[in-house]
Image (cartoon, rainbow, N blue to C red; front, side):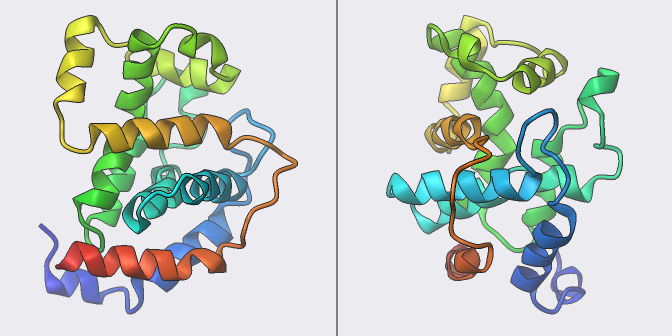
Amino acid sequence: MTTATERAQIADPIDHILGLLAELGSDRYGGEEVTQLTHALQCATFAQQNGASDDLVAAALLHDIGHLVNPKDEGATLRGIDAAHETVGAGYLARWFGPAVTAPIAQHVAAKRYLCQAEDGYFGRLSEESVRSLAVQGGPFTAAQAEAFLARPYAEEAVALRRWDELAKDPEMVTPSLEDFRPVLQRAQRSGQG
């Protein structure tokens, strides 16, 4: 649990988070043709277009923040290492957001593993980078693991996030700006504090 002192270290968490995305998001997203920021904006745009809640749109925007805040993450999958960006990111954001934002983030890798087991053809639609990261993340779930995953709180939201995650790799897609998502993050932050 995060203390009030830890939260106070960053005066405006939304400014901080948007700043991280703006400053650190210009690097390529793994082996994809988009940057981390472009990927985040596309994922959040898909969530909005699908009528997702503010919490889930925020999760879509922030789902890969663990790549940005963990210095050990850069090139990890190419070295055969799982840097657990989903856990790092959810933990980082938990000081400001509730589980409706952080749980789908924490589970979006598990959702990929679930979909590879549960949905015919899903694995074949993964990008080369997603296949590489899946290998270090434990590969597809077994049937028992898939069943256990579905029983978790926010599993359905994590699956929705995962689907948008896979789509959010289009170098030509036009999205709203990062600043356009500020009100969504503010509402999601407030809802997590209640």
